[in-house]
Length: 214
Image 1 (cartoon, rainbow, N blue to C red):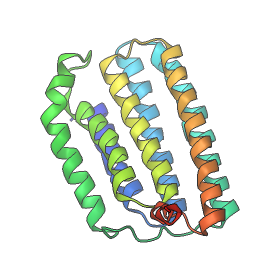
Image 2 (cartoon, one colour):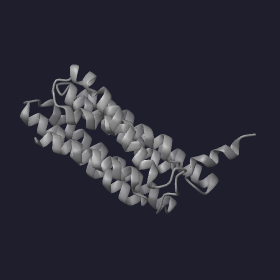
Image 3 (cartoon, rainbow, N blue to C red):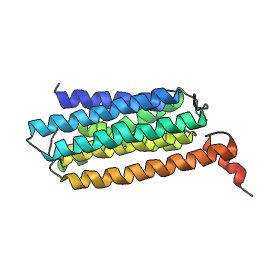
């Protein structure tokens, strides 16, 4: 098994941990590890394919996703004194299994389509990119915590970046910078909304928003 496949598998494992871990700080640390693995993919592909653009991607991703986004998340944890996630509707153990099972099934069924358009014809990185993308989607569906939904969005975005690196590693740095700029603003807005939600409801459980009805 080659290096990029190992890094991709580790990214899938970290997506399951970010989804499953109940303690918020541990989830953020695991997200940092996942993003460092993504940066490693950028460097590895940059060296192997002589794609200098990817070195720029790696630097941008390190500054924004390894440093800035976690800083915003840790600041939110400290400000709201968050420790543990409230139990989701499907329970702590069932929802990760559902999410990973369906994500793998979807990835296995559609990755051949991605392969047709990919510069790198390797199945595991493409499967991993779809799994990360889908774990982000299921994070929004199956977890009630607004904080976990921010992390779900971050995983969703890591999936996009992994697929972009594998399918079109020769894209200019400006493409990566544009995506990351959008992601940073999205995280800032979601963190602000989560903070206001917590102050109003005393919880990050977004299901409480139904109390606003009527």
